Amino acid sequence: MGDILTVHDLNKSFGSKHVLHDVDFKVGEGRIVGLIGPNGAGKSTIMKTILGLINYESGVIQVAGQTVTPTSHAALANVGALIEYPGLYPYLTGWDHLDLFANGDHQLIHIQRIISKLNMDDFIKRLARGYSVGMKQKLGVAMALVNEPSLVILDEPMNGLDPQSIKDLRDLIIEESQKGTSFLISSHILSELEKLAQDVLILDKGKIVSSTTMHQLLVSQGRNTIFLQTSDDPKARELLQAASFELDKGPQVRITDQADDTLAKALRTLIDAGLDVNDMQREEGTLESSLLDLLAKDRVDD
Image (cartoon, rainbow, N blue to C red; front, side, top):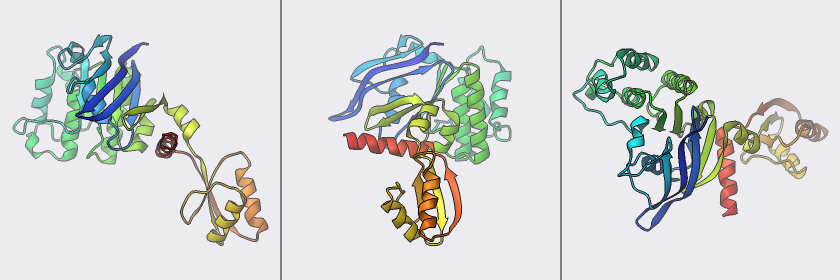
């Protein structure tokens, strides 16, 4: 499979502030790509630039091999998007919105499928002015998917959704990707993005600091930890630090699991000192911990 989206050496400034620095990445066909980073890193700016909503100083954006600019965006006809909050007409129903945005060759059966998958049947015929935040968000996602686009760009699509609705959305995105649709998604709910994304782009201060698969990121950056509850946690921390174990900050005894024998050595250190170990748990590294570690390293390098 090829790449549905190519972004090469993209630069963008707002006045004297340079917000995107030589941004370079690709989105493959049928791939789910997570775009993550701290607030103000430039995630929404990248998405708006790809969609031709704002101009850029230099670089190349191509969708399905066609260049996209604010004045040349024919390729965006096959792109669906939800940026921030959906713009809705208060005196139209949800169904009216989907019917309005759907191309003529998309049959009612496809619209009904999206409605059912996102569990929208109970409110789809009601006026949008009475929608909750979650209802509006579901409708915005449905509008992005209604024409079966090749590429879907979603900025914080899980905003306002309850846990069941988040799962419904996740299942639908995975199903669509398996049929060949590509997704570029930003979300601050990293635990959900970890379950969803196959590839990850990490953005910091307008620069891509990592472009990898989710699996590789978790393997290379994820910190597995060992949590111990002892008869004297302050004393345990003191003993383990003196023995050169790497501990998380805070009062708890949480050790970085650096080697196969880390746990055995830690237990031996504590037991030999006369402490009781009352509980022990292994905790796998997460996308959140991987992101924080990578950003910390990037800022040290700066």
